[in-house]
Image (cartoon, rainbow, N blue to C red):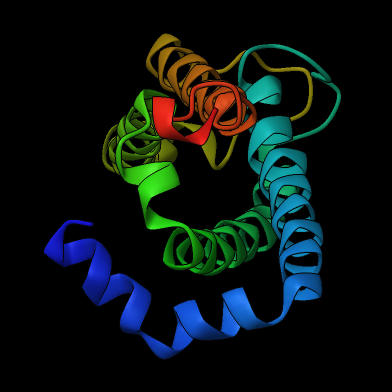
Length: 164
């Protein structure tokens, strides 16, 4: 084992995850709950900006974004616990690397949205098409979060060879 793996395995969190097998199922449930919050709010907001459900004003959906942020942080916490339990399963996994890259893109894209496009979107009424820059950012957001979801699902299929 690599020194960093030894260190991760020596943490209290790693010991907790490994010593309570049922905890993994609880964490997976919480992780999927977080995904539901994230996709159900951010995804819906992105779809509205892309033109779906135009009768709903974007501001009405934007009020739900804090729930999506809460879901994201729930996923980060459970993801750290997953990683601490089996660091070698994630650290050498290309699907995990791509998932982290897509999460980084989604975060940078969200920051870009609030800097570039939010002022134009926050007062849009029902039935109004979002400006092009908001639609582009929404498309990137939706695509990056779908990539995060897909890579998360692929983690078990692209394990390092010593897992097979």
